[in-house]
Image 1 (cartoon, rainbow, N blue to C red):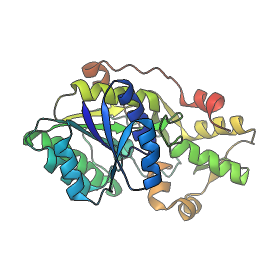
Image 2 (cartoon, rainbow, N blue to C red; image 1 turned 180 degrees about the horizontal axis):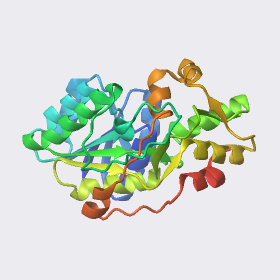
Image 3 (cartoon, rainbow, N blue to C red; image 1 turned 90 degrees about the vertical axis):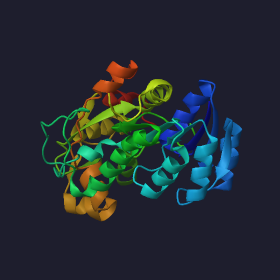
Length: 299
């Protein structure tokens, strides 16, 4: 299958691309940087010069391809509209990458939520995630326009990427700050819980969804969960540092920005990916984010 992939140079996209190349697909990858384009070509991905604001390029590539996968940005509505425009009426697959902060709360790290979402749970997003939820719904609604559109809503992803980018955002970000300061810090008390999944298991699910997910499908992508406190304890063990410290929310905001402090690192995001298992037969191979941190997190 000839596939157009946005985010080919990124962490998720690079690993998904690696898997799809193994499956025998041919890939064209959107890239802004010429040097990264050369590196993509060396991996067997044909570079397409452009960015998410280049609507005409996105629409043309969607029309040309046999399938489209967006791993570049969960929140760029213009890019989504351009891709759907190119796919409308074709019944081609369109896989879109969302993120489970759509179920985030305002815990600021100080409490564990007992609310767990699956694909059937009604969702009333916090204000900061209303736009993302609207994009997810627009993609699913594209199934009414002749697009086999699918939303894959990833949780906290861990593991080493297999493309140009090795690191994800959350765990490596905490580890990098700990190396710099000598202290592992979690927002608030670190009691907030996130579901998680290994990046290679994510790539397996994208492969399955490309082959057989029905139009309009939505999948949470998870295999386990851990509190930020437990994640930070594992980081401290791996790096040989003292026990983690609380990071007052106001101080975290100054360094991370309010959205990242509140939703990426301070919220609860607990989900169960029932449909991926029941509809697609997805089975994860990796079982524990904390075990991966303690044994494989790059030093």
